[in-house]
Each structure stands twice: as structure tokens, then as C-alpha cells.
Image (tube, rainbow over all chains, first blue to last red; front, side):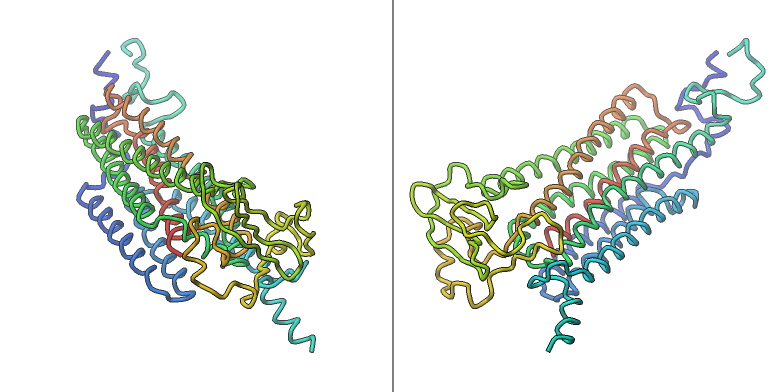
Length: 127
Length: 301
């Protein structure tokens, strides 16, 4: 009985399931993430205007890539899993960019600080 | 099974009958998990769209609101989640290497990280509640048990009262120029909640603002700042919604990790079968991934 039903600890002929990522690589990834966290807090201390948000997003995107590639094994995983995940990210990027492009074009009630593009154009049309 | 020798290959306990091989079962489970994680990204993606649109239209709300967030606590929680992600990823490696003791230890440390995160978040939330910063309309209610006093009122261009601070027995009463506020003249500016484009009640032109900056020194409550832009509560609504949904995911993660810990203690996982540890780990890393974006977007910029 037991020889035909191995316990989870026993290696079977199919033991080549998944990819074992050494703890050394995981620790290095984690340390990089902690350093990048310090970096993003440090960068936010400077007033760079609009650059602040792009710097923070770039660091966050890099940190996220480290998490996905190493912690989540995507670097060693079947590519199709990555296709699924990146597709969802691409859809969110599409959603955000369309929504942002759209919201600046409407001015149901033009109020101070709103619909900057429309207000610029109206200011040019109206003397 | 000795009476069923028709199976040409080994058929371990963990292999469900609708899969041919453990590898097929593993790959199918993993694909299913990635599909679930994609829906998680889309779930939070909708909220990130909301954040982007509101921030794009009203950067001043976010500047004024993020002052109330404690960057140190946010950074601490970021580090806690990263550390728990390291222990989780290492736990998967230990499961794959049949190391049961380290697996149990690392899963316990991951749970400890998750609990620490929620404890810090609890202190952050309760501190805001103490300041009277509640989600939703309660944002305008006076802070409980507070005895701050300040007088003065600010009337905007439209004739509506933008922010009223009353001195007296009532410690702090703040009212907003909603049309149905009895004391206030009805404002001609559209009230809140009709959509992002209609909400710029930035009624205070720079000239209307109290010139004396000494005034600010007497403010015992940060919400009494007359320089505060209108509708800062929207920043906190978005903050509570996004961090709250993330917090729910952390709490769910504690459940998943506890289930994994029980399974590990029972010796369910090993090099041949570690799928639950792997997939639970993927979920936990996505929780970390989302916080990696939430932290700078709310606390830093």
C-alpha cells in the first residue's frame, strides 16, 4: 500500500514540479526591496514638482517587478502565467490612461482648477 | 492500491483523479491562481483609476490630505510586508526541499508580519478617528471628547459658507456649504458627489485667505486650518477605501497562512506536493505588491 502511495515528502518520478529558488536569491531580492523603500522615502523628501510622482511610480514599478519575478517565481515560471498577469496590468494601464485623458476634456460645470485643457482652450476662444 | 495495478504510474494521495500527473495538477493550479491574481489586479485597478482621476483633477486635496498620514508608520508597514514576503518565499523553498521545521517557522514569521501590519494600521486608523477624520460624511463631525476652540468663518465667492468654526460650548463644529445647511446661504457651486469634474470647490482664492500666518499657531486641531482646500474628505475616502480593501486582503492572508501552517504541522507538504504553499505564497506576494504602490501614492506624494 504505502509503496504505491507515496507521502508528499517522498520524491516521485514527477518531482521536477516547479522551480526551487535558493534562499540566497530571495534574501538578496528582499534586501533590494528594503533599500528601494528607503530610496523612495528619501527621494520624496525633495520637491521635484511633477517629477516626484514619476520617481515614486518608477521605484514602485521596479520593486513590483522584483516581487513578481523572484518572489513569485515568474522568471522561472511558464511564460503563459506571465502573459495572464501582464495582460491584467496592461488593461489597468489602458483603463487609467483613457480615464485620465477623458476627464480632462469634459467641463459640465467649469470650476476653478477643473478641466484645465478645456479652460485653456476656452480662454483662447473667448476674448 | 494493490488491487488496482492498471495504473501504469504512481498515483499519490494528493493527486486528484481528474489529473494525469502531479505536474499537470501543479501547472493547472498555478494557472488558476494567476488568473485569480489577474482579477485581483483588476479589482484594485478600478480603485487606482479613481485615485488617478481625482488626483488629476484635484492635486490640492491630495497634498493637503497626505499631511495627516504618518510616513514613518507607512514605511514601517512597507518593511514589515517586504520581510513577510521574504519569509513566505523562503517558506516555499523549504517546502520544496522537504524541510518541515523551517517551513513551520517561516510560515509563523509570515503570519507575525501580517498581524504586525494590521496592528500598525489599527493605530493609524484610530489616530485619524481621534482627529475626527472619519470616512464618508462623518468626516465633518467634531472629534469625540475634544475641547479645541477656534472662532472664525470663511465665506466663499459664491456666498456659501465653506468652513465654519464655532467657538463656545460646542468644541468644534465644522460645516460645509451644502445647500441644505440651515445656517448657510445656499451655494451656487455644485455640491459634492455629482462627479469628479463638478467638485472643484476651491472657493478660497488666495486673496480671501486670512493673511496672518500667526493664526495657524492657535490652531489646536489640524482640521481647523483655514488654508485647507475644500473637499479634502475625498482624499480620505479614497485612502480608507483602498487601504481598507488592502487590509481585508491582509486579514484574508492571515487565514490562508494559518491554514498553510496547520497543513505544514500535519506534514501535508513536501517536495512532491507543495502547491498550496506555493499558491498561498503567490497571493501573499500580490498583497505586498499592492502595498508597494499604495505606500508612495498616499504617504509620499
